Image (cartoon, rainbow, N blue to C red; front, side, top):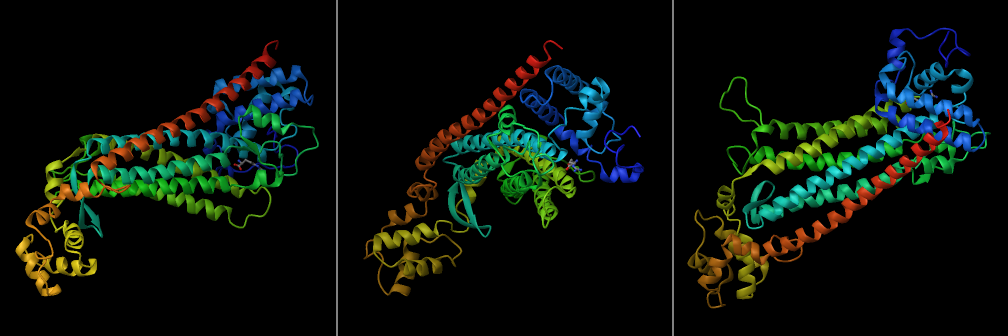
Length: 492
Ligand code: ARG
């Protein structure tokens, strides 16, 4: 048997079905580049530690550069995973006496954990940039619609007037927490398990700190058993992604509802719509529906990861191989969803007239009217609530004489005598004045929202720079790694 992994201990090879069942090569596409980087770093460290000769490491690194150049499809796909397939190709190229030395002081267990973390951190950084972008789109919309009235809802019933800016800022803020979560999670993903070997560390005098540095991890995962066997970083990432996706479904749901004839608040750009194969008039919000539906991938992945990891004994178990594809699926879906949602929001048409018209239907100014009675007539809020509640049963919007009648009925006193004027009533029933009075922090008052937009813009810039800085540090470290690789291959 020429299989470099099985030839010693095992006699027979798995048949096609067993192979298909046990291989991770398909999902390992995600970590091909990461694996080469891990091989580079490990080889450089082994050389610096005097564990392999510089002449051998030059050949190994050169071989690895070629394997990278050739790409994953050139590997022998009858191997059970990328790590062994890659090593086998290296041995093909440079011979076993040299290539066979690369895996000293290492196991596929610490190798795979390192590769997953490397790739995942890259995805997380991309996801953070996408979160910044969608928030910027929402901020832009908010900036344009500080005075665009609309009905605000509770229980999906008209509740009080608000503005489109206020509404967009709510979604923006939720996605802001998602960004915070992603940044926190990143710090735990970006730790190095390399050097843990199978689980028990190694008798070679390796330098874990050096490979950490070469691969730009911010810390080492100290205990070697934990390093190879923990996948809580996947669970954490999947849960961050689930939060993002659940927040996006709330936007998606509104886009679907708002684009219905009954609402007609918005019209999605044709790019994001589909039509019917039978009903020629239809414009369906399919992309928003898919966004809503794709959240299932994220929550499904989270549950799968939790289930796979539950009750696993220390240390490495092959079950862990089943965990990895779920995170890729989840990350892929989430990142695309963020981009598509941002595009849909940026390109939708907002029907300001309909929104303004609807902002007062359902007597949405009732709260302000009750508040006015409290402020101007010095009556308890609970009494004002009853008076206005009774007025709400009427077909028409109440005028001052309706209010006076209800007041006498419930309070037994004249509200006009207590100071109520027609002007006060008119103002209470004006949706824009309702909005303007709500000028506490976080309220819909256009100036307050303007302040809020300015604050968040600044904060977003800081976060954007933070993400860019992390990427830059990683790029610098990897450029240094390549310098070492070039140094070692120079005379080879
Ligand atoms: N393909 C494996 C995984 O994803 C790599 C580690 C294999 N280790 C082992 N002891 N069989 O987990």
